[in-house]
Length: 379
Image 1 (cartoon, one colour):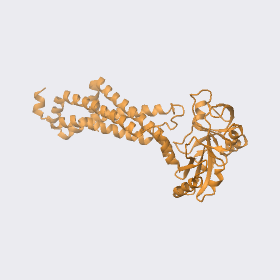
Image 2 (cartoon, rainbow, N blue to C red):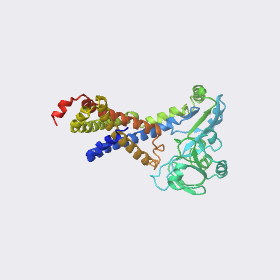
Image 3 (spheres, rainbow, N blue to C red):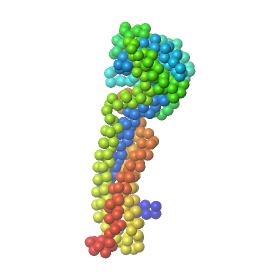
Image 4 (cartoon, rainbow, N blue to C red):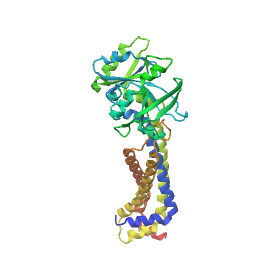
């Protein structure tokens, strides 16, 4: 550490070159952070899915409905603790760009099946007592400036007409990565007003007594409704979320490919900078050896400079990425899980240091192996 001032002084000898190299690191780590955020946005639904929940959808497609009468039949299957249902609404608030998920829910069992969504008992009671009541996620409420008591007009797209809702509560999440962009209202309000599809729901979510019952209960549900007009497909919540994410293609491969190109380019840029730096200071390094500094010291001295550039640039880029994600989802609902997690930050720092080592190892090794006589002869 006592040689740190000397390393820092060397960095400021060529200010423009150092600034450009650090800037390259910062840009690369900013892009890396954004890739981590996007990957997380597509996979968070899988990561937060309950291990003790099953989703029951129409065998044809999730957009096809299921009868409301299935509810009681599923509830009688051994191993089923609770069941709720949802129906996609798909309305427009003010402008079509204002996308957010809207669901007609079963208010009696929603909190039992999804305990991770937190709302006060008083607000939930007010919601139950108001047929036009609605519950908004904290994220969507913040986005539009909603508060409890506001009346929200939504134009129906799937179900035509002008629908109005009273905000009776705002829910939060018990985990950092819970989806806070949903909008809930009572299923009975939808079923009373819509002109078609009465008595049908979008899908069921089943809460199990134990995750070990998942395979048996899923098979029992699908067998029960086999060869009926509304056959079902039952799978774990995690499996359904994974299938949904795959519809967007191989996001993992795309992100790894882009990240690989970014870091390879960064390695070439930083390696070239360090090679030029060592070549320019070969005489100075030879003098250090001549006055008694060891080959190992010269190796670590050059590597230290490379690592310092990597650390400064890496931290700067990740800090910029973290600041960028503080604003939340820039896609207005398409990527509700938009944040840079701590593991992603630590991974980014680790990769930056690895690139710093790889970029500096060849110039450092060259400086370590140089002969003092040959280096001074060229001065």
